[in-house]
Length: 353
Ligand SMILES: NC(=O)c1ccc[n+]([C@@H]2O[C@H](COP(=O)([O-])OP(=O)(O)OC[C@H]3O[C@@H](n4cnc5c(N)ncnc54)[C@H](O)[C@@H]3O)[C@@H](O)[C@H]2O)c1
Image (cartoon, rainbow, N blue to C red):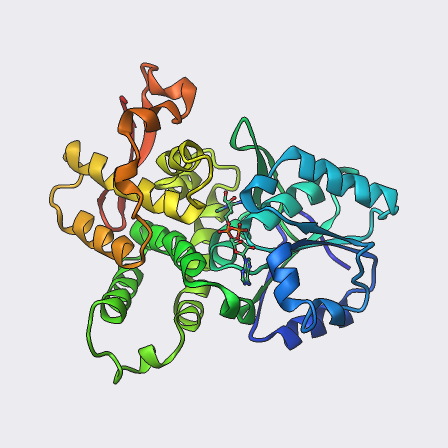
């Protein structure tokens, strides 16, 4: 029933788990295999997984160890299980979890029998707005995301209810990717986030404002998720394979991946990208691409209030440089970085490190 052609992803939004279950149980008439984040399984075992009609331990694989699981060994173990139980080419793989689970699930789906239908179900804010959408997947081998493929899910099922169980830190990590896309493409959204956070975390009294009556996760979902997905897709649809324009989505990520690796993945992807974005604003200022401190100060305030940059001063710059892409650091071309002149005004510049 699913068309897994690269350009066909049907994006669907569900308010609650019951609605998502209805889709899964009523629309799927073929064999399924489920790749699931362990924490998500534990939280939603009774309310969700036990109600999927064809879900069992036999046709599922649980991702247990976060980023440390994002490797070829996990991919091989999943493929081995699928082959062992004889999953057929017309079956459907479901990836249900955060960015780690979806990166693994997308890669597995693209490899099994040279490509099998894939349904992606993001359960973190970061996965909803970034990892789950755009067709890139991959695992870490020697360096971050080094082995992967482009493979779109045929169906992208974004369910609001999953965000309710995220802890504040994971929620804020997802917000970083929304802030990133806002810095690149949507000034209005940037300041909506900025003033929401300032008022929520700085102001003494926001009890009268409607927005603050809702839990934080619901505000992010209702106000920013669809917008962030559509902004990302606008870019991806123009340059799917990242030959040019799509590279702007790497804002903060070249340094971000270096921070992540340098900490041996003790800091999370979201924290690392927040540090990476600040580093880019610093470089933009030093090169006089960014001509005043306003934006740097605003983004710093935002990330500080979100408690994402507490490890900033624990990293030694010389150490970080060792983890930047090896081939580019000292070449005459320098390191290609996305710098900011202002919000919505990016430039790609080759920078000597
Ligand atoms: N492919 C892409 O385009 C792309 C884009 C951005 C990021 N990524 C990748 O995504 C990964 C980061 O994603 P992430 O931040 O979602 O990390 P993650 O998948 O490790 O999830 C973060 C934490 O949240 C937990 N979790 C997941 N859903 C939950 C829920 N509903 N309730 C409670 N806890 C839940 C997980 O168990 C984990 O502990 C990185 O590996 C990064 O490289 C990929």
